[in-house]
Length: 420
Ligand SMILES: [Fe+2]
Image (cartoon, rainbow, N blue to C red; front, side, top):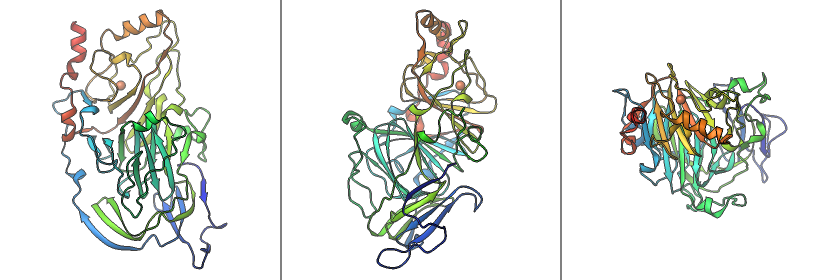
């Protein structure tokens, strides 16, 4: 994260004595990226964050997911509705696509997760539907449909869907989510989410930021759109298990005290949420390419947000994408809302995920261009499509778990439409 936040109580100077009421000192902890050379935060714990009492190696089911090359080469369509449902946001996620840089998963969650620390990379959890609470050492975030929740590598956290009992870890409370701003109907929806796990950091595109990290005027979102974790979030407990994934595998570490004991923190590294509805779309007179929709960048991949916007407004414009061949990247699209003019007749609907790999030219279904031009001539001026796109610069492998949700007819949809 490029900018500074402070939450709770901190001492005036860093690395100075911070007295606890009743005697003793708070324990200072630096969470720092790239050694001591990039963003960091200082956290102040009631108990030493180093005190562990047990370590148990666990079988990592996620590591057993089989990933195979997209061979023979095909465009793919997965219906997320057909995937297994249930579980929690961490261990219920099902990998669909991945490579050495990123794993893309989907989850329909109905249970609170264990406390979890992913030390292999940053995560972005895109909440498609439902309401849930993200709790962490930095504090809590109430997340709703449309939120990207960015979780920096190493953050101890857990996810609690609205209505689910609190997870393990010494706290048995129910998620007390502030529902003032969301309807009961929304809270009753199942929690579904797309999960992006990077092997590295996920950041705001560099070109959106000033030299010192402020969002520039041309950026499609800015500081005011980001909701940082709010604390302090304090929990009591002893001998508290935390599931830790690092590059060696999965371990259950038991901490002497509950890790949610941070009375204050400050710095530029923390979890935050950004809602896709706060992305300000950039439009052109003729069709604008996906980089105008870029939201995040990760190691060898980008994340883009397609949002409701005015249609391209030149009288001669073709206001849907042209056929394109991304020679260097595989393109994954998650269709989350609205009406997809370019995909009518392909079987793609809300909840679909498509993969258009390098080596294959993709574009609108034949007939879609003429249909949208007829719409414009009849007075249509906007598109309400909403989608999350991930472009990877290394080929995406296909997870065995995704097979059950695949539409085998998708690859032939362009030819079918062209012949009809
Ligand atoms: Fe595309």
